[in-house]
Structure formats: C-alpha cells, structure tokens
Length: 63
Image (cartoon, rainbow, N blue to C red):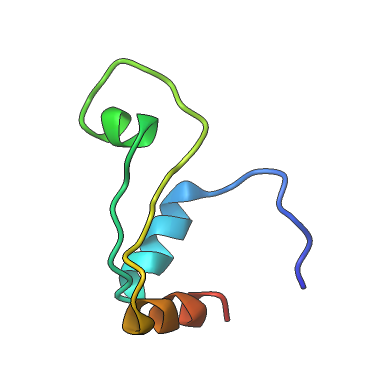
C-alpha cells in the first residue's frame, strides 16, 4: 500500500474518476467554489451512488 500523501492533487483525482467513468457529484464547499463562490475550502465531498456497477468502477481506479 502506498504511503498517505502529504497533499492531494484534486484535479488528478477527479480526472481519474472521470476517465474511469465513475458517476459522482461534488457537494459542499468545493461545489460552491466550482460555481464561483468567493470562499476557500480544503476538502472535497464527492459521494457516489451505491450500486454494484459504480462500486466496480471505483475499485478499478484504485489499481
């Protein structure tokens, strides 16, 4: 298992999810920032629908 990163590249994470075809939504402060809200956030909440196909796609992104 890879060591926990000191920083997260959110752009790369989102690109991997999109490239893998994982369906997800971004909520919370990050969603506000994407829409242009003048706030700062250091977290990302991206829940995905809980169904077998999506869980399998998410597992592929961990490889």
